[in-house]
Length: 176
Image (cartoon, rainbow, N blue to C red; front, side, top):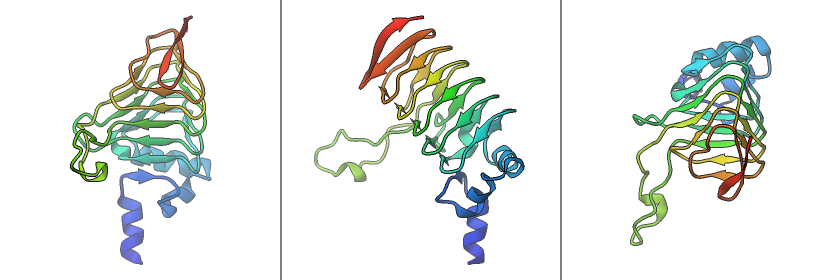
């Protein structure tokens, strides 16, 4: 039991699957303390809500005035380029998933589960962007400054600054 509690404390994750540190997320002072300890950077006036998940926290930077809502998944990777960077004043809806790595699937003689992963690629959400609820952002994507991603979208390539995209895959709807 003690070994498990120590692992909960030291692991590079946050979320309901890590009960010890997850309890801290319910109390504002403890929330900020644990987030500053776990994340690479955690800005002022930011909030990581209970029932959000973060994998490889030490590779995730969250700027000022950002809220990570329940159900969201920030899945960085310990590989060299496995960072997730969320800049200042980004609005993120509930159940947003950001992935810095993806499964290999190019061999037909092996199940996908046994093929491993492609090299990790950084995910960046630039200042002032708005990511709607239930959006998935895949590895290597940059969402530009003040861009808007419509709810339920799957973002597979970069989004230019000052644009609105939506759909699966996300496509340009208009320029702001």
